Image 1 (cartoon, rainbow, N blue to C red):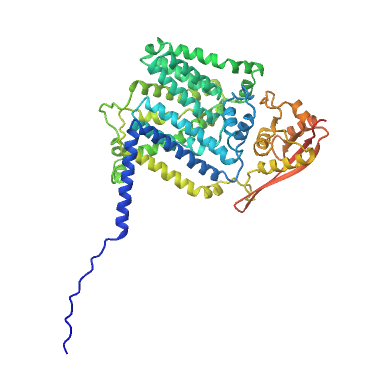
Image 2 (image 1 turned 45 degrees about the horizontal axis):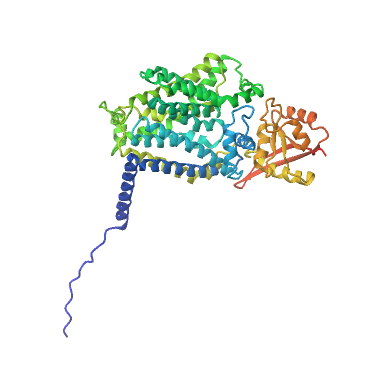
Length: 551
């Protein structure tokens, strides 16, 4: 029997593993995206689109992050205070000029009084400051470096983590960049129009907080110290700026006089007991702000010094690792005249306040440094000897994206781990929002009308204004100047709810005020307790005084 001939075995062609091919595809896409970012950043038309798109992405991402990071607590009372101010558009609010209240009033006329909207307002504020800083950079460096500065600013904690609290300090991240931008424009153009714009920018800055005189003074000193000062001083720009700023401030100055200089009396409450206390405050101010600046500067240094197998160079020769980013050749990417302006302004506002606080025993808070160091990334990138290659732009943008996405992913865990706790392990955030809901319902039951006034200290009364659906106007206890939103006579005529939080340092003063001004009120005791992620917070007791409307 004949057997069929056996066919020789043939090997089937083996396809390459799918993962290496997919990896090559991803790397190829990443390189194309990186090249696109670098090209757009240098393009005269597309650079604006890239800067705006990056800023919007930053605002949206960090609004989502902050909403989760702060989910276990109510908004800071600075935020609710600004919301309360925004209920009436006045020329001032007792302790501060009106700009922060005006902005809050406009914002919350479109958005609800909700936590996420408050964090969106804070991030929109820093976003506008970022774009203004990018505009400043365009006067000093080329578009490539300007985008690098924009990303550095986004990595600066003041523009993300520390920017959660909308208040007058944060508003200066809009007004001060616009002021510097107007100054650089006036210094370059030296026209009537540029002088008027500079004066309006100065008035806008003063309407945010009087602390901006530090920046106004720094700009004036920089103009006087600049080698080309006579070209600027002989033009109409600086003199028209002064006249315009003074004229624009007349209505506010009249308001200050009408309230017996209440904002300055408020500032006088910060007193120094000894030179040692002044030294401690200055040391804390300097250390706090230097620590915040280390992150963007360290990331920028790592990105600029990066190379294949960079870690071996960094370990073996750290000096060589950082030296690769420097060159003594000419650099047309930097306008040295405008760069000198930036260096002078940043140096003056960095050195002046702490030395002035020591010399004159002035109380200086760490938060006062929030608006004063936004120029530092530009001051570094504007050094002509520093080289910023195209590839550095997508790298630093990638670092920003990775850090932001990681923070977003771990925000719920960070929120739980960062909760302040008492000796029993209960977290200590007070639920003012819960109290506001309870009191609104009680008032409607008793008075059959809208709750229009609340009396208490700022950290309690303003929270009621924010969280109650009726948004009652606050009457702050023992506030001689007052916000101007509500008088005691108006509160007694329309009725009000007085609130004293038990266990606080000022409870005795609160009780004394209520005995004097809420005599005959219906008294009750309420308590709130916040629950978050299956955990219980502390129970907080409030002494409540209901004063009915006069018939």
